[in-house]
Length: 121
Length: 381
Image (cartoon, rainbow over all chains, first blue to last red; front, side, top):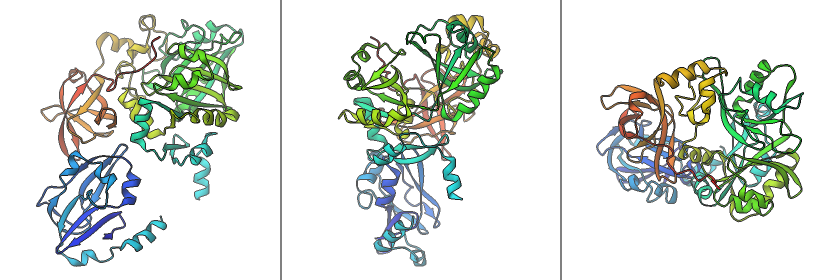
């Protein structure tokens, strides 16, 4: 599992990356009441708004952590957005995106580096 | 630099109490206030509707209007020049909701007005105004204040609210008469050795009380109420979702200097005699809109599906024409879905009208709905 400075996690399976938000992010957002996932086959550039997560109070964007094409989305979140709170780094995944440029993966943090990053906030 | 910014944010006397409970503090109307506690907004909201929630509202402005001649009629007559509610008919201890209107009939603030009930003080009027508006409100009053009437701003008073169906049982342990205290009535009394002004009112749609107490006593009173298992501390996050489900307006969002009380659906707060007689600042617009109906109306809005529509969301008719804007929107924990309110052109204000909300560039279906989203649970005796 790798992490971005935007508190998203990425799990690489072959040439596909699974994307979600970190435990820290899920906790900071609070009770999540709505998730909008992208459409399969949608194409994103690294940094584009790819999904939306809304807590009772506010809406937050989920960025595409790398450039690629959406290959699958977690449709279960539509009816059970609270899964993002209960299991953010597992069942609460958002989407799978094809890795088109492996250089996009440079600079991602491992769990220890992310924990150290959180300490700096 | 950060020191300077910090020093500009005020704290209520309960600041350390909130921090001690693990609250997340945020700046709100110039104060560091708890937005949520470890329980979280959703559970805090549900707890208030099922049991009892304790709110710190000490940031709000509390003041008295007192006449030198010690006649209630003198103060009431003055206040009636600034607000559209019937102040003169208030009985000792009775409270009413009203608004300060500007000369154009726009709402400068909404407030609670109470005629004190304590013997020897029934000539005094007690007001509670919004934190973000209080300086402007006081300046507005001072500007119109006639000789012989004084405005006394009480910086030494804190204010807490205990809201929810179990609030009466908790308060009754210290004050048995609180059980039968009528809605929108108050008592000046003592709770566990502390002088309080307690009213049966609040802003959650639930039964409950608002308690004014000296700054020096408020930590003790809050701790006393928190010692009951039924009571949890509730932050601004849940306060907002509770009042939205209850269909209540939040100043600066659903009300501002461009909105009139008629547009805002607050006609109920203007007693019949005052609608007819006028005699308050902004009466011209109020009476015109009562006669001709306003061009826009505040409505409840139920988005279809799960996506919340936030403040600022454009409202369109089914032909894609802009007809209004959402002024409060979020998730209703008791409704278990998105809830909103906003202003639409009058012809779309009828309950059940199909509308569209432009959320992130896409038109989402919604319809107007009768407020409140959750039935009010006020004490009716």
